[in-house]
Image (tube, rainbow, N blue to C red; front, top):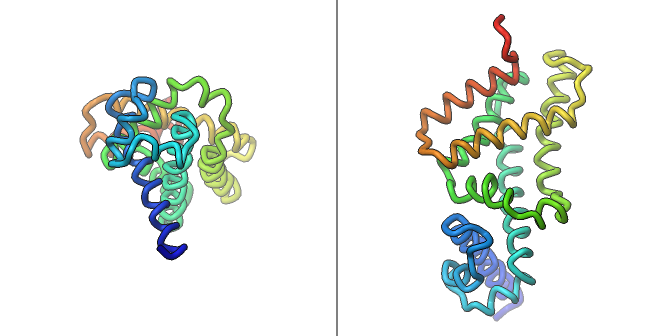
Length: 202
């Protein structure tokens, strides 16, 4: 096999393992899932997993990095296509985050449920892809400050984490429940309004 074909084959097999891991973790949880079950979901032999990943923890981190890179790329592309100012873009950002529960419930559950349960992941992993996600949100806030739509006395780094915290908790509730398309729109409007205008009557 030519070198290019071999590389494509390896890339495809790695992708199948990551996809299989996502399905397996969503079904049984990270700790209860055996490597053999991931292999079965991916359609590969058990030993093949270790040709691409050192262990199950390495697979968890690789899966997170892969999926967060996809989410970040999508957010950047979608935000570029949105017209209007900060309010429209924040609304679009929130909506894209919540759409995960409809478009890929396994991924939404992996991000909101499984990662919370891995102390090793939380304590030891640097999270560069999550840092990139926060940077997208931070840049959006700074654009709003530069345009005069947002207060300029706010720390954009703290605000990006605060907004993510709100998004993550609402997405968790949606993931654990029976979310319908209309629920995404309702929660998007509600959270966007709270973030933009606060809780007090106007």
